Amino acid sequence: MEYKELEQLWRKYDNKLDTLESLNKKLILETLAQKSQKKIDWLQYRNYYGLVIGPIVLAFVFHEQFRPENFDLTVLLGTLLWIVFFVYSSWFFISAIRKLKSIDIVNDTVLGSTAKLNDYKKMFVRSYQLNFLWSPVALAGTLLIGWNMFHFDFKTILFIVLLAVFMLLLSRRNLMAFLKKSDRILEDIEDLGEYKE
Image 1 (cartoon, one colour):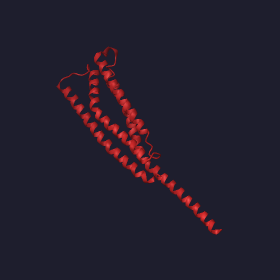
Image 2: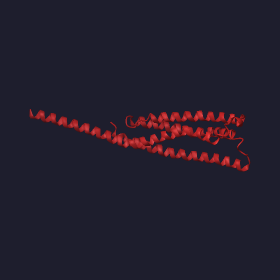
Image 3: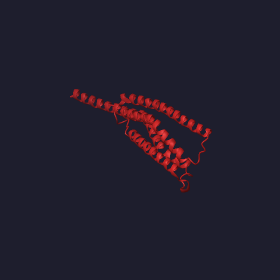
Image 4: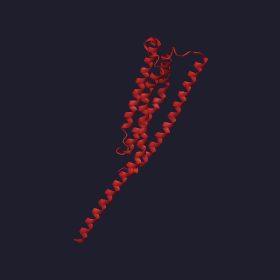
């Protein structure tokens, strides 16, 4: 009788230890996952910012051009180009937000989380490549909207060309920074694998 009681006590003790171990792993996982989740949340906020900032800047800079007396064919064409650009960029930002929201570091498997983040990473790189197509559209739209405001001499054209080159270099720099940041997030997620059951 004593042996069976002792065996039952050891089983209860083993079950308690197993429960405590799984709770500890879960707490450690949730604590360590917060850092990566905050980085992913920051990427989401950047996409929300990108979704909103384009039309606001356009309306703020060119609000004088959108008056009825200033509205002509060039403003109409520029506005249409910007609408096309805005539809594309809105689609990208909304798709990116959805992809990032689908990442649940704590509940997804390591492979699932890394696959979702890699999908977002591929989407971001593809967007950078398409940026070479869409940047001239946005620039042409901007020039057409502000056609009456600009005086095209050598200095203005040089400024526009330098601004376009600067924007492309800035875009390249942002891509490199994003790739480094996403690689760090992927490493953090892979390190969490030992705490998942």
